[in-house]
Image 1 (cartoon, rainbow, N blue to C red):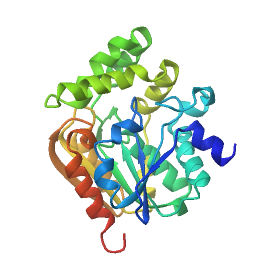
Image 2 (cartoon, one colour; image 1 turned 60 degrees about the vertical axis):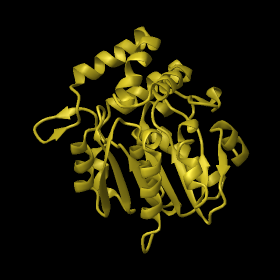
Image 3 (cartoon, helix red, strand yellow; image 1 turned 180 degrees about the vertical axis):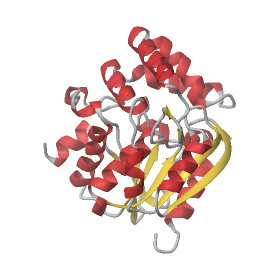
Length: 271
């Protein structure tokens, strides 16, 4: 697959004219349009790369391979394919939620493409694994959510959207996330959900080679602050920042604060 094919496959778009490149990697059930609250603030400082994972947004669903996209490594390959297609280097990768881990996988697979990582509401594992890790959910609870997704996808989407956005989120943002869930191809969504919620990538945290900023909501149903702190403690060279906010989508509900944090982190000495 050549560069033009990859650009079409992942619906890649470029914005901004900055000397440095920021790649924005969306979370599960979302697409690149979810970054629009952030892009006006970042485009004055950076060249932005936006894309959709295969199965999401405007990507080419014909490219979906259940074996490739049955693990997060398959989504990391999408990121690396885009980097090669656009001949990128020293990329600042901003990943939301599961894309934080996907970004870590990509950066560890090919460190030369990247310079810094920004992880928004990340979690290396959503499962509770006693005695030393609390990801927030028992396996039985997550399995029930996945079973609901199989039986009633629209019902699952309407249940998850307010849970993910948080109780303080404006209704229009909850509706937008619900619509985004519903617009995602069901077959791809099921594969992505299982790869996201039943995996455990804690073992890769210690292999982090790039400076990383972890941005965490004060209250987040999917990834509580203890998860972000766990990542910080296990990731060399990482910085942890707790934002006084509720919900899992800081880049939508608190775009100004997130943009300020990204810009400051990327302009640090040696960054």
